[in-house]
Picture (cartoon, rainbow, N blue to C red):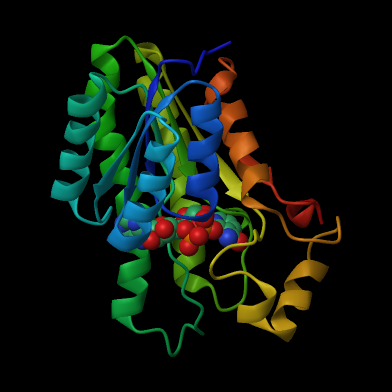
Length: 247
Ligand SMILES: NC(=O)c1ccc[n+]([C@@H]2O[C@H](COP(=O)([O-])OP(=O)(O)OC[C@H]3O[C@@H](n4cnc5c(N)ncnc54)[C@H](O)[C@@H]3O)[C@@H](O)[C@H]2O)c1
């Protein structure tokens, strides 16, 4: 089993939701974490809280759609902790709009963050992983990278790309002892997905999950840890979705 203890991980979109839950899970296993996010206020607050608990955490402000930011983020992790073993490319946004009315700006923004952000994270992490004899990449895709949803044209495109980029890269870097997998969450309680924000639509989303509820970030974090630890897993798109894609 791959041991997380003493390994160094970068988590993008680390200030909230799935990213933050995964940071907590990796810290519990003895890992060291650089949290990256473009929301400086939220990032500062969570980094402060974790540092107050004497946990090995650094915060870094980065917009994953900006390659220089991502390059500097990798440099900051190596500077802070001496090496890089794990990257969880998790930052993402969602835009719902019918294709006829979807602006190119909104479409492109989703692609830039959800897809280009994963490309930049992988590209700049790999050289550091090679230096330490291997590593693990986990990308956050979505059930909407596996099946379509009405009104999710750009999001479907970006997450579908993440799933196949994951498989492509897994083949490329397997000889270097670097594993690459993606996690495909069903709907998960978050800043955007909750009863207050969604009203009646929340129950519509719940009904699409055979298990009768949506997930919580800790359930996705658990799967990410599994993908990191299991040394026979690579090139896989793991749905963690309460049965959503079983239908
Ligand atoms: N919540 C869901 O239902 C769900 C389902 C499937 C997949 N996902 C995916 O999970 C990932 C995490 O989302 P979440 O549910 O935890 O939502 P969230 O909104 O709680 O967290 C996302 C974090 O990413 C950050 N972020 C967004 N764009 C960024 C950028 N350009 N650069 C740096 N940071 C950026 C945000 O500031 C936020 O802290 C996303 O990729 C999302 O698409 C979420």
